[in-house]
Length: 79
Image (cartoon, rainbow, N blue to C red; front, side, top):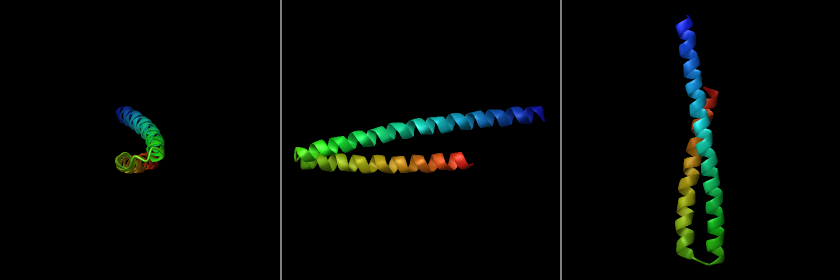
């Protein structure tokens, strides 16, 4: 029973580390989205259509990554 408790504790600690890592990546991804939004706004003011398109695609890709991370985080939190 004691070994089982140790194994459960190690598993819980590993899960907590994984959740913390996902939260860190979520924060970085949110910051990247904010930066991209500012860059898109600046490109819009400069009327740089090609840059707006490039940044728009990058924003969409980053947003999709964030959604996947949030789904993963939710699943880990509720498991």
